[in-house]
Length: 202
Image (cartoon, rainbow, N blue to C red):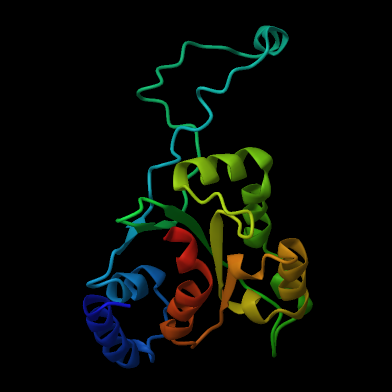
């Protein structure tokens, strides 16, 4: 890490201590501060994937069986909208990310508190088409890692059933998700990125 990057990190550590008491965790703010003076930039609500589907070619039989209006590809926005993306401005590589906040079964609650499905909606990221698009657009072709990162927030991160469920889904790809547990400093979030994911953007 260069002097410039270290300078940015020192600023981050100072700010992190002051903000650790905040009840609301804010990934955008954490990384904006952490990336000061570095080659990394955080995109909030990136548009890189906003029009993946409109240009998908269907076979003639399917075209005849569906409603098929004329589509203006310059205006159509049929795609996905990640919550964030982290880009290495030197290599142009991008890691797309989702934030999944959900309730969960913890002390003082009934098991039904974990019935939300925000975590299940993140499973679309595992589809062959989206993985291919994320790798192509983001430039992450290393098969040791998935081309996305999901940050879970809220009581789901302590739910005995949901934590096991997510761990099962990701299997050996443990670096591709992070359980940002309540009242936990953003330091851990940044450390996870630095140690586990940053190297794939170089």
